[in-house]
Amino acid sequence: MLVPINENHPEPRKIARAVDALERGQVIAYPTDTVYGLGCDLTNKKAIDLLYQTKGMDRSKQLAFICADLADIARYAIVENHQYRVLKRLLPGPYCFLLQATREVPRLVQSKQKTVGIRVPRHEVTQALVRALGRPVISTTANPPGEEPLVDPREISDRFGGVELVLDAGGGGLVPTTVVDLTGSHPVVVREGAGPVDAL
Image 1 (cartoon, rainbow, N blue to C red):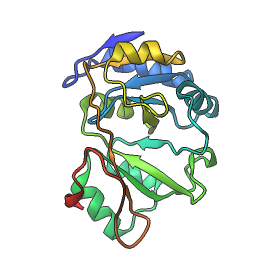
Image 2: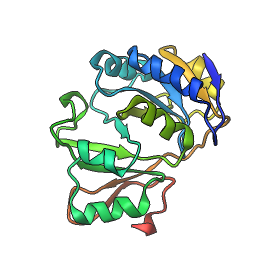
Image 3: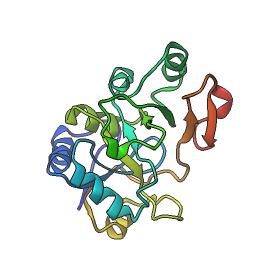
């Protein structure tokens, strides 16, 4: 189901509909500052299973946490001073940062190295969604495996049968986030994307 939403001033009742779907264990699609994402409630194991199944994604592939702000990150990731400086400078923005997971993170969504991918998108709809839910949305790019990200909300709704609703803020981007590993002493670019790497 497509739910048209204002990308700059998201209507609270439409955000509430999306939150209701997440709390019922459904998968939804939503815009970010890079590409559309598919996501569900971090605390619901069945919803996470449904997310992997909906995308047709291998269970070894890591999902990202969409957080509302920097304060939210510290609950789910161990952030030292040098890492915090990088996060403060570049978030919100088109980056996903790999950090060591805290005990708050369900094992199901940790990598073997006990890391998590953290995102704080610069997009009003995404931020409103996460704030209203009160915890991170666990997320992956809205692309069928091996294909480019889908930019048309209607196509996302048609291609992914398991998606309950799509927050439609118009066409999405084609370039995903820049992924940066912050678990070592220096940032390491894992995937170059929308976020400029010279900023690191």
